[in-house]
Image (cartoon, rainbow, N blue to C red; front, side):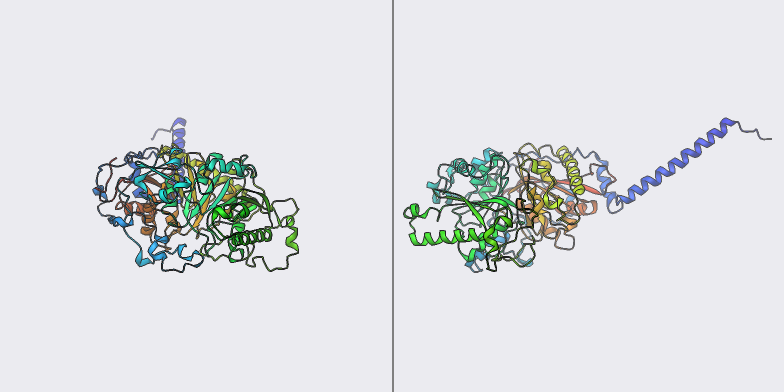
Length: 617
């Protein structure tokens, strides 16, 4: 007869059963989490990678430090199956695909059409790596870079001769020196800005974003940075040789651009201030179209500064060596258009004039009586990519009282950085609530904290010019905010939500762009590129290879890239950049290896024209 089990044995079996049930529950919970994370779409590859070091803080085979040159190791044999991209010919050292000089000259010259974006057809695109010039070195850290640029990085002396008496740029040994002068501020940009600050509230953070049209080497924007004002500077490709290239080498935000026939790639009501210092734009011509475009991108209450001809023509026409009648008519036209736009003239002295845009329609009494058909009839839209400028006035957003700022009043900077942008609080961006905005900020604070563990040089001054290729609400840039760096927030034209207006309301700058085309900048102008879900966004839209080659073109030698995307996408990217002279390492999402989104970090190797085409780490 079998012995009767004791009560202790029963308790033992009960505990065993509980452990089995709990174990099964835990197993299915983990399995479910695994499946929800998307595991299975290439995650086994990522898991294999993470076995060598799943801590996302450790990127053992990458060296983010700069070496300025020297002999290096060749591409790892493990990447031998990748397509190898060869160097382009040396004549392409400063190639700007959509502003190519030879292509430009095939277009009409009227209204600067030939200087606008004209991108190569698919069969004309280069599928090679743009080389750096011999002797290329990493730029000086900010703020030294504001005043000095290595000659080897942009070896063009024409401006030192052409602008010698205007204090733009001087050649001294192996560097260019930028004394901070300009055609309209021979005593220096600081003194010039002091004059503006006597009228415009620059000191208290009311003015944070500025637009500099026809910027030259961007000394105005360079010296505004010390006053916490962020200027988006632009000039056409080589009206004066390499002016935008010099600006970016100095560490100042700038793009190649022109006021011609196409709308500027910025949203309405973006800038607190716009500026022209002898920018050679015919403001009184084309029935006021160019001033109407400035009015579109200028926020209610914003300022427009014009210095140089024709301001105060009665005093200056002899020194300008221009006919008195011509200058008088030019200023009359500008004054008439400004009145039509309902701008209030705040100041005119010497060769400087300043207007202020009214805060709403109610503060424009003259506009009520104007019988001319002057307002844009198409719905107010920030869909401006390749859209033609219109000779009409962009209406103000509606207000409920005469003292209300149309579109919403902005806080002074830096409070503006994390305040809820009016475009979000008003519900103007469908699908983005105030709660979603706060969640986005918190998410990117966590992401950036993880990035700084991966690459400890991010906030040291090593990376000055930073680009976010898919900026969303600008929370990546906000999390990085520092006087040591600036971020170009790019909102893709195919993005689900048009968020660039909200980015500007935060006191950040950015631009619209279609990544199926080249960006409006010179080669080697960004130190760090952030690519969040850019390849998922452009899947089936254009070739991944073209986007990666464009990233390589605009990234400095020994610059870094942070990709954040689904693991199967990043596996393809990692394979492709194996043939591009980049070193790369995939690491886990900061929340652990079961999250399908991964991070791929890469460093572009140092190589130059005619060199050994490799780098030492």
